[in-house]
Image 1 (cartoon, rainbow, N blue to C red):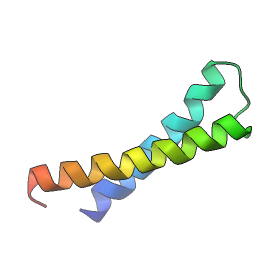
Image 2: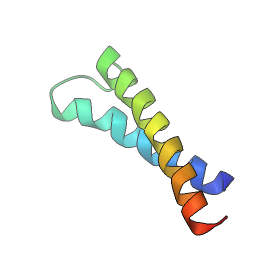
Image 3: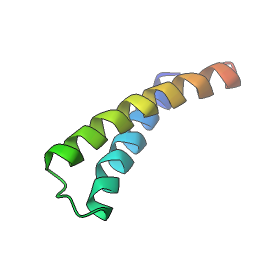
Image 4: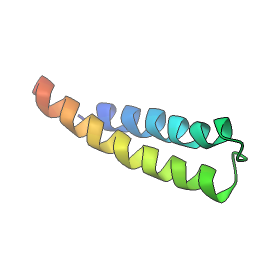
Length: 56
């Protein structure tokens, strides 16, 4: 299950930090960092759900 959680954190934070750049913000701006944090939290949630669904 740890692998799924870490995968979720990595993918979620990468996508969460990248999405504000599509809207014109810099990657290291407040919005980019906030998006990365929120994406990482969402990735943890998805990793936990996936681990429970797969019975890992």
